[in-house]
Length: 133
Image (tube, rainbow, N blue to C red; front, side, top):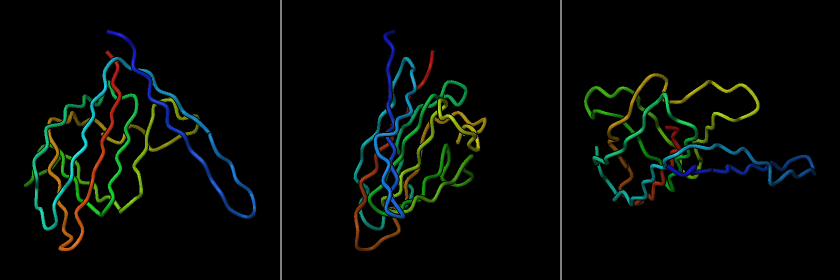
């Protein structure tokens, strides 16, 4: 399989200084990508998602409104994340400084259940994962 490269670009501004274009690159052999619109007042919308924790090289999840993600089960999920609106979850194995490690821990993901509790705002969610062989 040909290599797939994901480049995560970061920037920061404050105190009169701006840094932009700072990049972290991960290389894998497969990409998993999901882009969905989650309607208002949606509970546990099932979305297939195949990510092997041991092969994960990078993960980017972004939602335009607050969402709850439950992995592998809606009733007893292996992992539950509450995403804030417009605040990405970003992780890559090549990040140069210590992070809390692989955000999936030891969980292989087969599905995600997505809840949008808002009664007024639909949400777009984008999930991008890069995996090694």
